[in-house]
Amino acid sequence: MASNLILASASPRRKELLELLQIPFEIIVSEVEEVLDESLHPADMVQSLAMQKAASVAKNNQHAFVIGSDTLVVYGERMLGKPSSKNEAIELLQLLSGKTHEVYTGVAIIYGEHIQSFYEKTSVTFFQLSQKEIEEYVSTGEPMDKAGAYGIQGFGALLVEKIHGDYYAVVGLPIARTNRELLNMGFKR
Image 1: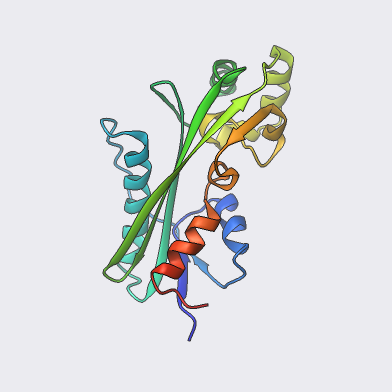
Image 2: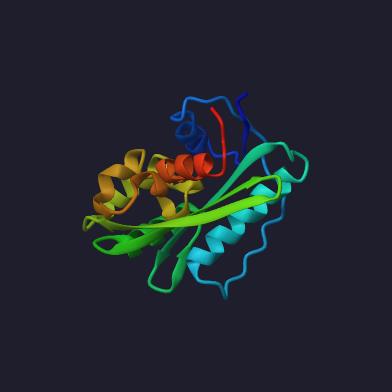
């Protein structure tokens, strides 16, 4: 008998990536108030946030595998969240222009008493961007709901010179590793 699978996320990108597994799943959005402990290393922070999301959904779904995930963009010591305005999006993209930054994506999978969490770190290097390129990209509206003010899977792909690591982790869910962890935990298709 196939296992039940739940994605504890409203992200359309994570939904699309999980669909690559070609197994049925449902989405139950976590209602948890995320507690951000800024003293944590980004790798620990994304795992903590992913765990909070998964745990809030798992408590009412003990017989399902529940996946929570969270992504942070980090440049130097600075964590870059979603921009609150077009001006902030422009500032973030100016900051990243011509430089390399890190994207951390944490995943937590809970099945009953079994818990597995991990993270992937991917380095992303942007081309040197002109002011015109930045403003044109911001005018698409795409940066406004994305950490670091860009989406690598959309128009933001045009900003990226190279990446080192898992592309899908930058999108929001390292799907190959997630699949392997599910199978290691006893998930049945």
